[in-house]
Structures are given as structure tokens and as C-alpha cells.
Length: 244
Length: 248
Image (cartoon, rainbow over all chains, first blue to last red; front, side, top):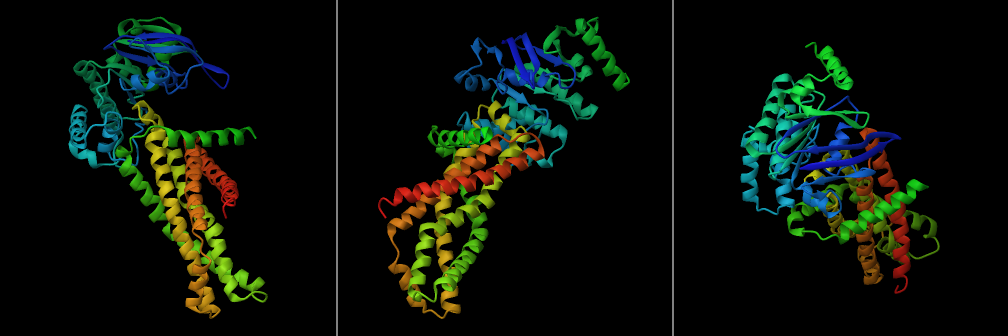
């Protein structure tokens, strides 16, 4: 379980996260939605210790995310960046196997096997191992980034805007992939997105982030039927924009 | 002023953290070898040209200003001493900062901007361990090698002028170089190379790791990397000269 306990983070005198608390249950898919620039990615990066809050703390599996625990807990967490953030100078095989080599000190043959397994889980063929990130499409990059995140068998995966910039068909396959990983590997997924359809389609619970706080937290049905002002405004703007 | 103080603090943190942290060198041998090749082989051309021209210019100036007052034999001594004590290490290191230091800063800064550094952290990989330590180790090996290479070519440039333009005897020129060679001065130049390499690489890495977002951030980081490297190389040059002056 991940407990975000009363965290506050300020940028340029603006409280992006303001005494925010949320509990994330094991094996659930929870989506955090909100307007662009509201602090969704900051919250996600706080959960993995990339952003240090001024107040509050994050507790993962009863361990506070502090000091040497950060290194230990990161081995349990995979992170999928919005722009994939694969290492440009390494091919896909080396990108996915990087943590196996430097964190788990595994021999090259075993690494190769685990990389091929991870690629299969995201429906990529082994021959992409030789490709470099600059030679791949957005959808393939996202899959490779997910393969990199799952190769260490994490308990949690944090997804930062996993479908942004992808066409609807590829977006759908990425969403299916997230759901399948959750079901097959029992991975807890925390997704940050402003894609409302995606959030409603795949989440067990949805959280609304507004003015540095979680203003709504509930299952998808209660979200769809909610009369919460922030949610109604977000829903109306989203459907107006997408024409649905 | 605050920026300069913070930067110097950060540079020394980068230097000592990378050097004294426990590293698994076996897993990084390929990275170290790759960096040695990139620092050394890729910089051969610029160091060679700068050194040969430097030798020609230095010996020409010495001859022009002092040639009328001192025998040619002492010109050989002057060039030998100045190259081994100062010009070889300084020339090669400045050339390497321009060729290799800028590449390191731009490369790490671009990784920072593209969130690749954050990606390493999320995989529990320490960027200092994975990125900076191999570069630091490679610089301790390649900079002294390039210093020796530069010294040889500096003297070669001087020889071209003395032998082919001034008509000085080749054997006499070589004898002059050998006669005035002192091992401790040569060791001093190697120590300078290693220290300049560590300092320059930690500076380049520090500014790369602390680059702000966007192309402008990469440009600023690269500029700062070169400026601080050159200034601190001169500072460490002075410190090393003072230390070795106790024995020389």
C-alpha cells in the first residue's frame, strides 16, 4: 500500500500540492486527473522520491520514502515517463536490461532472456532490441518504456500521461496493456492523465486533483455521476473539446 | 556570486562523491573503455594540431625575441623546459576541455532535459555511479596520455622550426632535449594531466546534471562548463606547481 501523508510542495510561491493525502490500495488501478499544470506529475514524482516535499511524507509498504529506503523502495516501483525517457545512446535491449545489469548484477544471458520476456509482455518482438529510441514510433517507445518498467517485477507502476500524443488506436492498446499487466502480474497502477475516457475505461478508482488537494476520490461510477463542481467543469470542458 | 559559490561547492561534491563512493568497476569496464576512446581517440586531431602549432609559435617567439642574445642550444632548453613543465599539460587539457568537456556537459544536460537522468533514478541507478564515475576514471587515464602525446608533438613542432627553418642540427636538437629532461618535471606534467582531467570532468558533469530545462539550459550549462573548467585548471596548475617546487 502507498500512503501519501499530508504532503506540501511549493513552486514559485504556489502550493502545487497542499497538505495532500491519499491512500493507494494494492493491485488497484487508480487514475489521478486534473487540469494541465495542476501538479499531477509532481504528485507522481513525489511518490517515487524524484520530488522532495517540504512537508509530509510518503510511506510505501510501511517504509517511509526517506534516506536509504528510497533506493530499496524504487526497486519495487516502475515509472513510465510521459515522453518515455529511454536513454537515447542505448538500444532498446540495453535500455530495458540496464537496471538488471547495474542493480541486480545479473549475467548477460539471463538479462537477454528477461528482456525478451518483458518485450513479449508488451507485445513487442525481440528484434526491436537492436533498435535505438530515435528510430521508433511513439507507440513502440511507450511499450518499450513499459517493458523497462516491468522488467524488475515491480509491485507498483506509475504512469505519467501514458496515452498523451498517441492516436486513439494505439492509446487503446496501451490502455489494454495497463489493464492486462494489472490483472496478470497483480501490479498496482497509478496513472496520471487528463484523458477522461481513458480514466473511466480502465480505472478502479479516480482521484480529482484541484488547487493542490484531492477534491474527489471514488470509483468510476461515482465519478461519472458526481455533481462535484471541479469534476463537472472538467467533464464539460473535456467533452466540449473532444466533441463527444 | 551565490551562483559561483554554489557551483564550486557542487563541483567538489561531484568530484569527491564520484571518486570515493563504492563502485562496482567490473560492470562499468565497457563504459570506462568507451569513454577513454571517446576522450582520447576523438581528441587526437585537435590536440595534435594545437600542439604542433604551439611548438612552432613558442620556438619562433623565443628565437625572435632572444635569438640575438642566447645561443641556439639554450633555445632548445627553453622549449624543452616550458613544454614539459607547463605548455604540454595546459595545452592538451584546454584542448580536451573544448573537445571532450563540452561533449560531456551537452550530453548529460540533454539527458537531464529529456528526463533520462530521472529515469535512471527511478530504476534505482545512481547517475553519479553510472554516468560520471566512468567518465572520471577515463579522464584520469586519458588526460595524462594526451599530455604526453601533446608534449611530443609540441617538441616536434619546435623541431620543425629549429631544424628545417633555422638549420639547427637534428642530433644537436635531440641532445638538447634529452640533456635538459628531468623525470620529476615529467611526473609533474602527468599529475597535472590527471588532476586537470578529474577537475574538468567533474565540472562538465556538474553543469550537465544541473542544467535547466530546454535548449537554452543546455547551452548555458555548456558555456559554464568551459568557463569554470578553464579557470579551475589554471588554479590547480598553480597549486601543483607550488607543491612540486618543493622538490624541483
